[in-house]
Length: 248
Ligand code: SAH
Image (cartoon, rainbow, N blue to C red; front, side, top):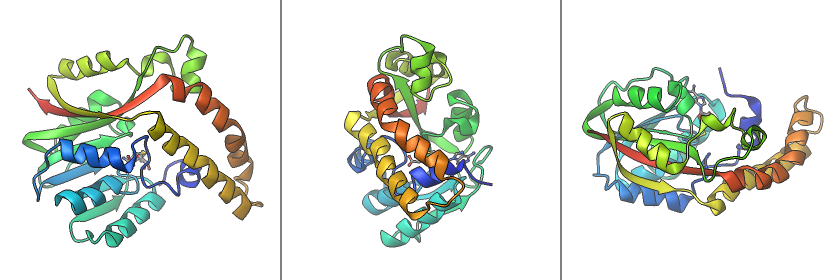
């Protein structure tokens, strides 16, 4: 049970698997005014950077679940490295349907809302783990401007234009679910560059280390096409942000 191999290769050196920089992650933690001891649940926790740094900087405790064995192992190592392994745990597995045994103050899903079948389902799933008055965090792309064609949307790795909304509509959609948007931190092009361009060096190094691997053809094709595709499409059309929600 794992994610498609291309991600375990291209993002193997990432600490943050989304367009957030370490600074944005810290800004988000500060913006939420986290009380020490707050329990945080993170579905699709990747390499654990949010939980580990927030445990170190804001004294939270937490649980992360991720389908990638590699990322989960990296998260555990990061917790050791930052001296927070007694406060954060990382589980390898499918987070679909996961509900915390003990209610949490913050329930998050950053960049993995397919886990609940989309934003609506993921908000519902996270709400099941949330204590009254707690905060839900959703990390999600939005259109900076509408793609002129479906091909442009596909260039952004969207299935179609209708997969994402413009920012005002996305914010309004949370209201439609009966949630207030109480905070948000948005990524920028530099953050996108860190997320996307960092994959290229990782793929290049992987190709040099694994020339005979069956998977090398796929990685080579991705490395060859990714820079231009990224600059033409996602970099121009896609925004990304984390939205903090409280039930009305
Ligand atoms: N929130 C992390 C990771 C975002 S990338 C961060 O911001 O760094 C999306 C993550 O979702 C990847 O780590 C991937 O392994 C994980 N994932 C994909 N499908 C999943 C599932 N069904 N259950 C749990 N994790 C999943």
